[in-house]
Length: 190
Ligand code: S6P
Ligand code: ZN
Image (cartoon, rainbow, N blue to C red):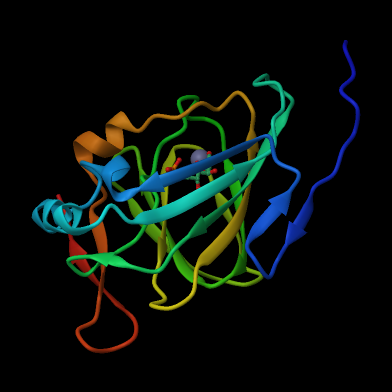
């Protein structure tokens, strides 16, 4: 067995980032084609501006069983036709792999959908540590109009991603802004 040297990461709770990181990815509205329920609103929005929706800072570990990937995700405030800014959402390719999300700042939702369309969600505020069991697709949503929603993820390094099932089936709960008010309401998607 080749031993990897132990290491640590410094989380910046104020800025919703960490250091060091080997990978940083930025996800714009144009990268989320097919993921928003209000697709017409997305196309309208894209004619105006391709806004930054979320960014992910990640540590690099071997993508092998036994290792744990870990990253921090920062979702900016915003919406598309009332549908809050969110991550794409995915099943793990290795569907039996679970994941942990710990919210470090902001206010969000963890929307989950089981393989047979089961639905569940958790409100995430600083300190809420959520368990995503095997078999659940997971998408995070920023429900605050002014502040980024930030959370840390830890998951088995051999998990992989399956975005296709989410693209094909969508999530059956869609979270949208309340008109002229704080908070969210749920509409039933596909
Ligand atoms: C990975 C984990 C997170 C997400 C990240 C972006 O298993 O769930 O690190 O990758 O929050 O979400 P998405 O759905 O665009 O990959
Ligand atoms: Zn995941």
